[in-house]
Length: 154
Image (cartoon, rainbow, N blue to C red):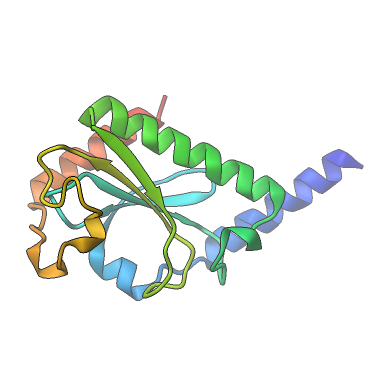
């Protein structure tokens, strides 16, 4: 009985992942890095701060409370692993994790490596005006993608 429930959940999750659509604002503001088990990993197009975003590949979800218990556990594990990646590669002063939905309602988790020399430190990154960001060069995005792929391929 338990195995059937797990199999049905896996089939449902696979179907939902195929139907998944990224919010247009996130599509414009990020680069694709990697698809984890449950979430899509994105790089915020702002080279002043190592800023990753996890988006569960499940349609029409706006809040963590809308996830099942199992999905919440998987999302938390993915947040932890992305944080480990940032900690290892960026040696940040602090890792900030936030879920906001004031502009983009689709559930997404910001995971930011705060550096003592980032443009907003020690203030919240949200205090910086969007026009002050510095876009990534194409080769920098490819390097970031390779690092992520190596990390998550283990």
